[in-house]
Length: 88
Image 1 (cartoon, helix red, strand yellow):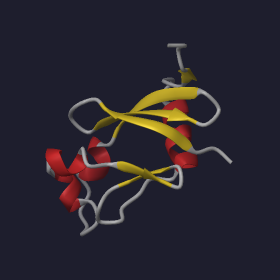
Image 2 (cartoon, helix red, strand yellow):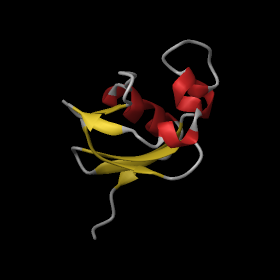
Image 3 (spheres, one colour):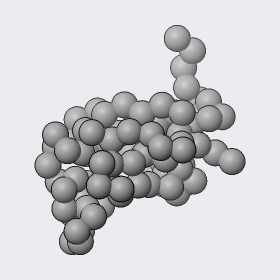
Image 4 (cartoon, helix red, strand yellow):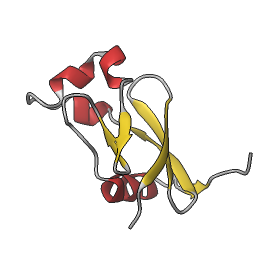
């Protein structure tokens, strides 16, 4: 099962996710935080958005909102932004 192994905030509502299989890419959550609803409204605050952490391999925020790692990977791949993480 694919999980997010590492996250990095890139500014705005963009995150870089590195997956458990070594693939990585960026995703812009702007369209998600623009939606209405009590779970996404706190994410509009940039400081709050940047409080994202990993819980069981899923990007998660303090209010319990999370993003499925499989969904995130599919979205990144659909945008043509999925690539093997460069060796450090």
